[in-house]
Image (cartoon, rainbow, N blue to C red; front, side):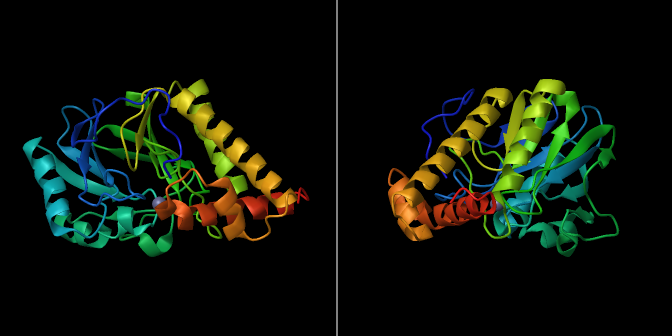
Length: 276
Ligand SMILES: [Zn+2]
């Protein structure tokens, strides 16, 4: 949810379809909203010189958008060979079945219910297509099935909804858990420190060029929200809805339902640790 004015390394301007790194092209889905920002970023990835491409998150079931993804690949002289999902939320995954039909590709995801084909996807997997290498990084927390994809050749990470290009994201309690989410942010932060990742290719919003700064901002933001929630409970706000009205007073009301899920996740986290 967009409760931060600007993120470190965030470029100005609107999100548009087009190349983001040497290997990644964004095809922006036409589903903008308070929750999805400019719309879902559908990522088309390919090794330069290779005719094969991978698509991450075909997006909503929107025939014109799915067609545009295929057209974009064709214009670049590429054939889509595989579809991957960062997680199962409909704004990322709803179009996957139809997209697989149109392209004849398998769909790989952590959640077996989202897969089409024989191959799963999980921790430690390396996906290689036409010389392109993607390392699977489990990043549960936004949802339990959230994955990120490390693209070492571009020193980039595709973060799905774990890190957004604008504002911050939410923890979809009870499926998403705050402890997992904090571990995932630390895992992504270590990619920036140990593996030189500097670019975040998010599921929504603009590309970020200071990945380390962004992850430090996200960790600090979560710590400060958690302290605010703890203080709200101590001062007598008992229900999740009361805590939201108190702590998220600065956030647009259309985001309060998502904020309430995050608050429930924070209350669970504090209770499990005996802090409230
Ligand atoms: Zn999501």
